Amino acid sequence: MKVTFIGTGDAFGSGGRFNTCIMVETDNHRRFLIDYGATSLVAMKNLGIDSNSIDAIFITHLHGDHFGGLPFFLLDAQFSKRNTPLVLVGPATFKQRLHEAREVLFSGSSETPPKFDLVIDEFAVEEPYRWTDLTITPYEVDHFCGAPPLAVRMEHEGKIVAYTGDTQWTDTLIEVCADADLMIAEAYYFEKKIKWHLDYLSLMANIDRIKPKRLVITHMSEDMLGRVDEVGCDVAEDGKVFEI
Ligand SMILES: [Zn+2]
Ligand SMILES: [Zn+2]
Image: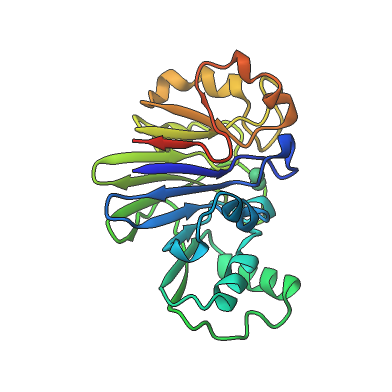
């Protein structure tokens, strides 16, 4: 699998980075995204990625920096005459929250029937969701967002990519990310502990219980970005690619 970081910022554009969006390409040339923040359509176009080449988008939680770009994506799909199927999956209440977001931002846009096959679905916690030859298992973590916040473990042809989403430390992450070929983890602060978010030192205090083959941190505040020289793992950047 090829993993491209389209956006690696927090909600506030720290470091001039775009909101969370990660693209995964599989060997059979399918492309899916994990999260689609408010700025993700701009970030994709900045990297020259055709939005109509995306087959599915999986959303970890319903904050604007993780799903707020979908109304823009869907409107762009209509106007650019997308004709290939699209699958969108998010946590419980995703269908309603997406509908509301579309109506707030582009009134009437959700009433126009798409000219492509659009499936909007919701995850059930700890129930594997199968899409083509990918299995994605969502786990509930600790983050306040008015809907179940998820971390996801994705399996494709024996390779594992795991992503913490936004969460304070929880032992659930051990199960989500155990032995992953690539673990993508939030590191919001370096050492400051705040509710609902993960700091680098808490992550590293538990990393021997997870044993990922490769670890990359993302979703960094200005504080964390100022201390990336002190970390002993990969650091995501907008446009950075990992092959696993
Ligand atoms: Zn976030
Ligand atoms: Zn969040």
